[in-house]
Length: 185
Image 1 (cartoon, helix red, strand yellow):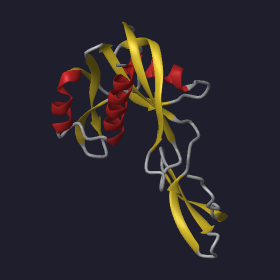
Image 2 (tube, one colour; image 1 turned 60 degrees about the vertical axis):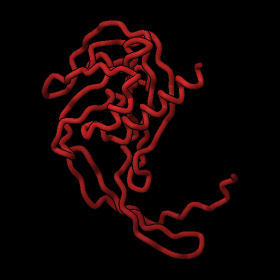
Image 3 (cartoon, one colour; image 1 turned 90 degrees about the horizontal axis):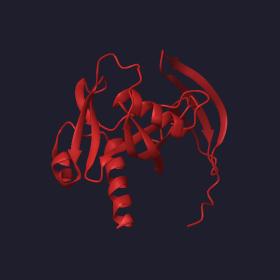
């Protein structure tokens, strides 16, 4: 399917709110049919992010349980973090693994680059499969130690049924892993 739509023209942007972590800007747009609208979006920091789907062995994935301020709850999910200046996705992924689960990976395989709510966010996240793990711990920026939770691949249905495994990015990572495993067979 060819993409022949013309993007709207950005007539004006304005920073409307800013916090320590986020910058919100308004975009005054003019569409190809002449309609004008104002949209708001989070300004992209340009750094990107990574999420790792770590496989401890052929039958076990590793999850983390960490506090999520947005839901004020502890959630199960995959290790993730921002790409630091000067790093690529692979380097950031290995660093995040060491900081969050105490392992490095000898093999990192890109599964997919995804966006989060593209109507509001311009950032992208690289989802990487981490295999051939080896113990290595680095100090991270988490305020408390994260719980590392090994999960058997033959109990994915039970994981999906858990109310504390609800983050869309982690669910996406799990489906990407299943697709990768099916193609490998």
